[in-house]
Image 1 (spheres, rainbow, N blue to C red):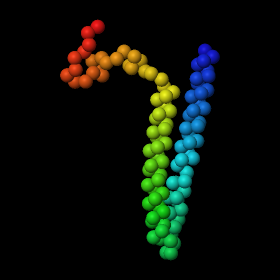
Image 2: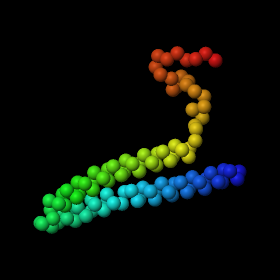
Image 3: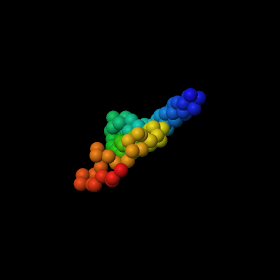
Image 4: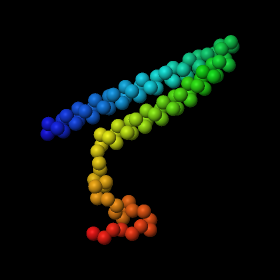
Length: 103
């Protein structure tokens, strides 16, 4: 029981850290995109604004993908092995045409 509480607190802490990490990684590209959008309103800064906006959106796409990968990894680490992994291959997970091992 005590170990389950510790694991739950660890999962909550890990969730907060991953969320904070996502915000820290995503903020600079988001700001670049917003600054580029503001620059589009000026005649003088229109062309640099397009460049800043494009770079910001590209960095935002990369940051979003990286954050999703880290969140999925953290989810898989905290979930532990599932019961389907313990039994090995069965008729639902076996490759088509594969011969099932004898028991």
